[in-house]
Image 1 (spheres, helix red, strand yellow):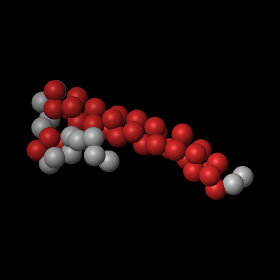
Image 2 (image 1 turned 120 degrees about the horizontal axis):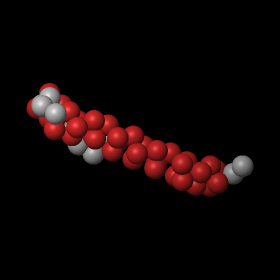
Image 3 (image 1 turned 90 degrees about the vertical axis):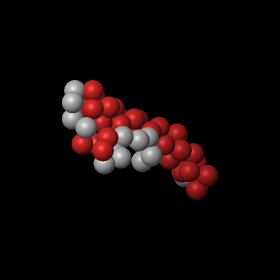
Image 4 (image 1 turned 30 degrees about the vertical axis):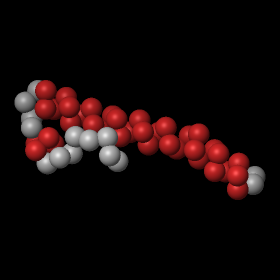
Length: 50
């Protein structure tokens, strides 16, 4: 396996997984805020910045 193939494989699999985890965790904060827990919002943790 050459280095270009390895980089392509990482880009295809790891980047979408990182994006999905980020959106999933931000959704936890949005749901908590919706149900009355403002802790994550007040601490600035509801963001798509990993």
